[in-house]
Structures are given as C-alpha cells and as structure tokens.
Length: 85
Image (cartoon, rainbow, N blue to C red):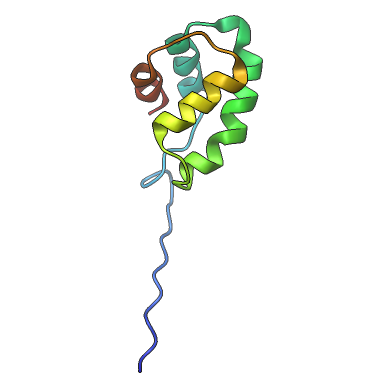
C-alpha cells in the first residue's frame, strides 16, 4: 500500500495568516474602550494568540478568555474581531 502524501503549508508575508502589528492592536484597544488596561491587554492578547492562530480555540472563545483574564467590561466581540483583522 502506498504511503499517504504529506502536505505542507507555507505562509509568506501574511497571505494565509494575518500578522499582527501595533496599528491593528491599537484598533483593538479602541474597540474595547478601556485604554487604562492596554498593557495587561497586550500581554494576555499575545499569550493566548497562538491557540487562536492554530485553530485550537474559536474567535469567540479567544475574546471571552481575553475579557476574563484582563477583567474587561462587556464589549462588542464582533467589533474587536473586526479591529483585529
């Protein structure tokens, strides 16, 4: 029996996966509306990001975790997601 072919996916220059940068994070901060928590938000945002990028958590679950860990007030997850991308 022939071996199954292996498939590799390479992403150059953010074609498949979005590369986060400071401008996009600033949009997220504005969408969330709690600028006094920016430092902690950035730490948690980065810490949890690999699970989101790898597809281990959904967008909604990611933002719920961010909200809980940072202690954010209610905010529009859809707005945060749009600002993120």
